[in-house]
Length: 377
Image (cartoon, rainbow, N blue to C red; front, side, top):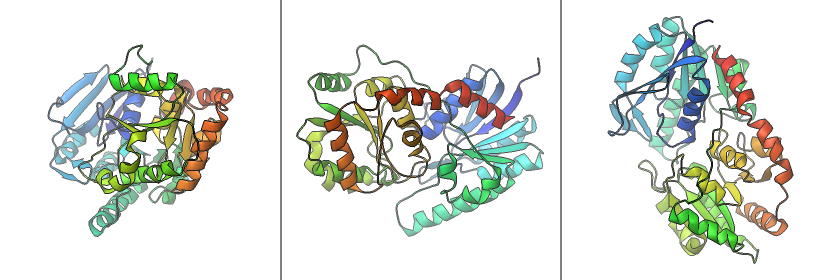
């Protein structure tokens, strides 16, 4: 039997960080750990995390951040470590967005290693001169890094064709879905989840929303849509995620929209992987009102748990519903259209269950793992 190929995997964030960007890579290493040796280079964003850990055969180095820029933690020592690790590797895999893409890409090519980049979304920041400069710097570094790469990939070609940074590199582009791994809900969950379950039993429709509370996620569109709903049936929106981010103040900026409808919203806080299955088991529909979304791993988790998805019709995010039919799409940034879709699913009841088999086919872990393994070589 041939030796496993050695992969140096550079990512700004890794387990136990809670975002789709980090979770996707964590899932990939878990699914393919028996076929590849992964050395993960990441940042120690939390002082409680160990500088070095092993998860089975996956080695994880967490280097100290030198400074923060927007939501990124920059580590110069990670680059120094990468040089020695790349020398021993067969392939360098950069999970993007990545603050160190430029030096890591250059180090990989100088060492003669195969360089792969997996892109999980263009940087989208609120308007302003400083944010515009950050986005321009990010785009420039990505352009050079992707130009040096042997191959680049993302979840869907639909997103790549509309991406600022992927579009110039479609000649070397591949698409595949990262593994979606979900646990089973617990019989007894937190008090907040149990309260939602009780409301469901009483006929209240529960819409779930989740993610970072930032402008990009379009929660203001949802808050504008809720008062425009015409249904007379009872409903609640349950939000899973942190509401205040250190780098963006969206929650407080749109309090004038959320205050009048706070009786319709339940804030559950940030949920971990053990708690998310309980969350999915307590909702009837999952809503994704994003302005920009590479794919939306959380919507895939919800769909796999049997929860129909109501998603904005935007590149990348729309592909799950378009491919499977397990849910409905609405025009992006159109609160009237979103309200209409919310009313429609409440009035029509279950009309998506027969499409669930399509979800299982699209998110089949074996099929998708094979595509990733081929990409890794």
